[in-house]
Length: 307
Length: 106
Ligand code: FES
Ligand SMILES: [Fe+2]
Image (tube, rainbow over all chains, first blue to last red; front, side):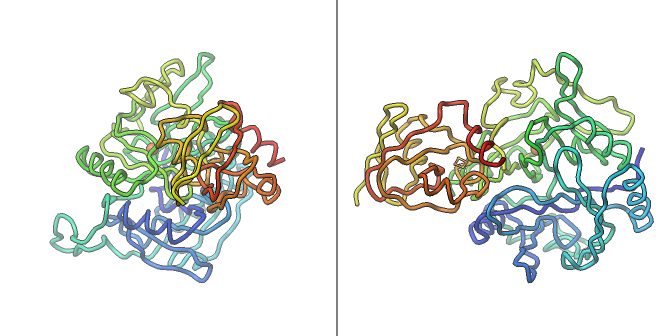
């Protein structure tokens, strides 16, 4: 049941070198820089996004994900969710408005998988980049590289998937769109959503907590994914795998790495879900096909290379 | 400097490395797979090797995988190692890519 969580809001990613990272996220992915703050963090967005930023880059000595934030419908929902998280027994940290520029107050909590999440209700509405609000053209000129359409989801690796599921589904109102079950029926992968997308956030079981597998950006067509692959070669960017198709979600995809070793994905297509849909289930015995539908073979790097 | 030689003592492989090229990239260019290839960005720790001798420079590496002590012992990430002279390296057995890192975090 929906609890007022609306969509992914932003992800804050740690990078080893900010200038190299900016080249990657702006020139290759095609994100647009919208601001910087006194802490040195850089704010970016994809062109179709209406709020001021969806990606925050922070220079640090180890790469990975600081936090992923979800936008909720309004302040009333935020207050209710805050109470519900506390009642559930989680520690909730309040972060004042303006700690991230032009973002309202946020509440932050950790899941047993070892990841930090935030909820917020307000962020400066700047509108889609490069197109007018009234009678908009199809797309703006002047986009760079892959011309990412939006920040779409993250995949995180960590332990305690069941306890993490409980928070996302029963407290935050996500529903399970897809899952991978092992022969004993234990869920080793969970794709959770608050929308019609197959995942707004996904988790795969891993012993070490708090690991970041990838941040994913949406592209419109398979042709765009192929063009992204060309750009990865032209820029000598570290590629992981693809272009290919996933069994899970059936999205068409390519994976690559930012200059600090954080994995990115750009993808198109994929199935849809409604809250009355039963979860799509893949068996762990078919994990190869579930992840790489064409190769039907697991690639060790995809399962173990994390930041 | 027109290319130096890198010798992997663990596997017996030998390859040449151009100026400005990382050890991992040089290995991939010569079609070898004797060091595990991960992110190629100093982030995942997959490509960790020990440099037994030779001079080199390092790019930025995640401190989770390479602490200053590691660095002193020559335990570094091949994707961020730029040789200045011929190098002899040693790598962990394939499949054990994470063990050193985990020990280190404790
Ligand atoms: S391949 Fe990831 S640190 Fe070198
Ligand atoms: Fe993904």
